[in-house]
Image (cartoon, rainbow, N blue to C red; front, side, top):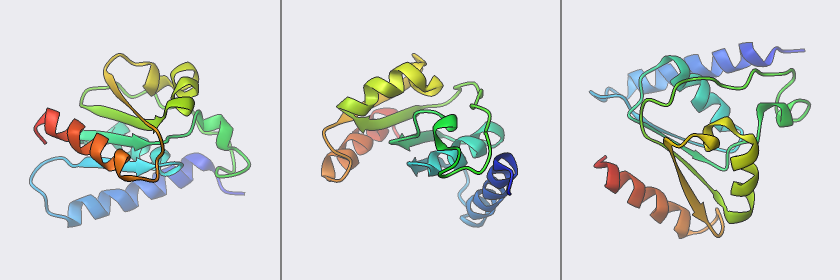
Amino acid sequence: MANSSRMMENYEKDLQKIVRSSSIPFPPVIFARGAACLIAETYISSNPASGLVLISPPISNADLVGTMLPTGLKEFDYEVGFPIAVVDTFERMALLRQRNRVCRSEAVDILRVKTLTDEETFVAVERWLDQLGI
């Protein structure tokens, strides 16, 4: 059985290659949705970023063991040193605020939307990026 930490390290290396090959002159804004938020958070734990947008992230890493993760994965403990937005529905945001470390941080912008499948999500993120000047 694969180790979840090793899996995330491999995904992080893949993302590093993608970022490097894009040849942008500044750290990127990383966007991730669902379980891919784990890859984004692994990446920003040790790589520069101008911002991070997590769309419907997992409530906790432990919730994914046995479905998306083969073994336990330590909860992320990086310092919030750049803009982060978490986008999710009104209902799910209450759970995230209770159990997700990033969502409990005062430094994180919370973007509540009715659904994640319509233009409302795109508009909310676009407005957030405009406010940041990105």
